[in-house]
Amino acid sequence: MKYNKRMNNDFSDKVTLAGSDDKTKLTDGSLSFLCDFVRMKPRVRTGRLAHEMLVKAARIKQSIGAVPTAVDATAGLGEDSLILAAAGFNVTMFEREPVIAEALRKALEEASSDPELSEITARMTLIEGDSIQGLRTLGFSPDIVFLDPMFPRRVKSGLVKKKLQLLQKIEKPCEDEEELLASAFAANPQKIIIKRPVKGPFLAGMKPAYSLTGKTIRYDIIVNAERR
Ligand SMILES: C[S@@+](CC[C@H](N)C(=O)[O-])C[C@H]1O[C@@H](n2cnc3c(N)ncnc32)[C@H](O)[C@@H]1O
Image: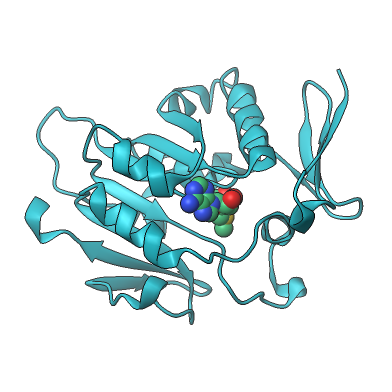
């Protein structure tokens, strides 16, 4: 079956989800991005995974036998969630843009029949909706809340990966930083991990306990003293 689904809000009317049953892509007519996790395989293999900055940022205190839990409150196309799931977390993902959520759903479906990915994606659950409300009605306190909202300032397009360029066309820069962070606190995690451009300001101006800094990305980590 072929399909071509247009975004329905003004900001995103140029990006569509197109494809056939086996391959799905987000496209604006010139740029396109294949929505699957195949390109992520080398990053989730044993040996490479421990070097991922997100995995280092996500180290937590764990009770013996307990399965660690994470909420990715800004799931996008789920690549960061996949890293967390590969590291052993049960990941609940929130995505509020319907076409991005559908792209992620298709990527998860496809991965479920891939022997290298299926065990990882079995730990990933997608909720289509806004995490600002969702984080307050989870029914459990996750070990980690991960936030990667769209950065307000657009970086020159040549410097941004294809995936981000398309997401930037769909999603407005984050205008609800304070609400998002307040909801992350309300979920009472051990850690809130925030992904930022390396020189970007702190989310909602909140200074983290510490940061892990790479070439282009920085992870700001807020530690919840009550869960230590
Ligand atoms: C920069 S992208 C995240 C990329 C993602 N980390 C990945 O690995 O693909 C930000 C995403 O968060 C979503 N988003 C932003 N605020 C949200 C909210 N309050 N609830 C749910 N989704 C949200 C946007 O629609 C967008 O798809």
